Length: 408
Image (tube, rainbow, N blue to C red; front, side, top):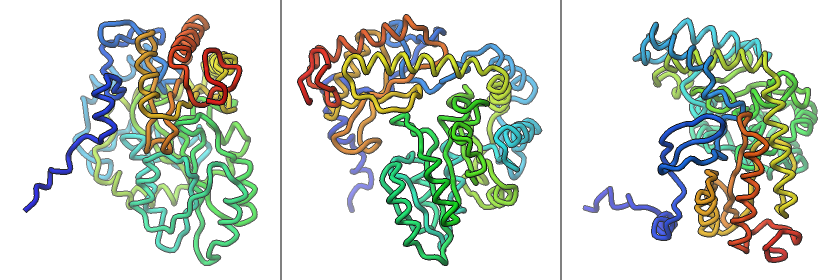
């Protein structure tokens, strides 16, 4: 009989990265120093990979709210929401979120990943699910848990999505699944195009707003508000681990849909509920999001400085104006070398390798927050220029790039 654990080996790619000394994952943060900086391997470095866009994770008001809830309610709830794990605090957050987002009801769960998994009961055997090819892994897992027939459309390709809707079984329920702000590229979904198609074909729209709620729109309600199309979104998921500076997630929509998920979504039914401290911190963050729009303005202004600076260096930066910026490299080993040299320069960014991106499309993902100063962005740009000049063969560079190979 063979050993069931014989498959438990590192992928060859990971072994190669270890051997080359450029393995970019599971890097421990020793201390958060504030002001957009952290301690890594005994060095003070600039954090350029965080999704804490509004810089709330270290905000004294969130810490105070979490500490108070910890003292009053303990470290955890020791049960699922459906049994003994529901707190009045959860219900307060649900009511506040529903009002904020303009939905009838909201269900709070323990992570953003889990919020997407709770969608699976909506994907029934008589439904067709039309999903953007760039959706997050958690949405892919929700699809696998469901029973709907899956059709993928090219990223933001409204012509192909329209064709899929036109040729779908008219007896089937149609659902469109996309992200508001895509987590890797930082670009936005074509919600106006989707809204036009749903008006024509009657499909339902499910929007993952993990990265955009709190950041985009006049009131911070995300991509839907940014496009003035909140009524076009039927169901919306979000996470508290980005703009809310905490942990947890939620799914929002019509009351009968949320009530159905409360009793049908196994990912929520059989998971312990969100701890009190995280819930209280998310509530405090929501209040700040509603009352301090200057945080959004600050990070978007900083993002524009970063994007303009990278474009001036010769990088082909996709449009969008959001704080998440991909630097296309291509080769996985070269990308990890780029990341390691950035860290040597005092910059901690993110590496995105397959399957998070297509084969041959490895990239460095850089993001800025409301805590970053102009001087820190300039420091980041100088580091990128220095590393790119040394590596000299970076994919995605346009001919004006300093030190690069034309067309590389």
